[in-house]
Length: 136
Image 1 (spheres, rainbow, N blue to C red):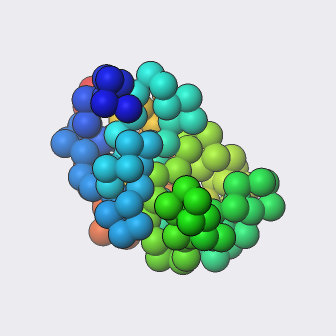
Image 2: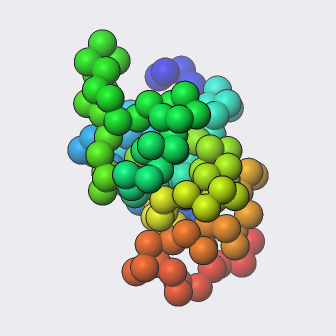
Image 3: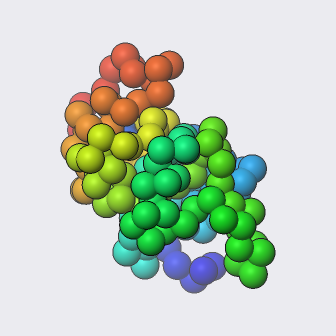
């Protein structure tokens, strides 16, 4: 993926993108950030904090994030782990009332093409909930 051009690392607040997780290592580029590019058709741009409820929901819809898959160097996720989730799956979970909390500072601005800012703000972790949003 070295030949792929990453989009600028800017979060939904208009600030530099903050790492989401390095343990487990997440991101489309497996660089710990929710960076993205034109090839990232799933838009792995929303930094979520996993919950038992969301992991079960995701597994039910065919995306088992909790089972380790060593052949893909994937250790499996557990509640409390942070992960760059597809924006569409996050929106779907939000609409069904099972969305996990998110880290706004670690969520790439490209997520806004799929998820409205008010939905992201509603699911923000407590320490980011009342952060002012920068104008475009």
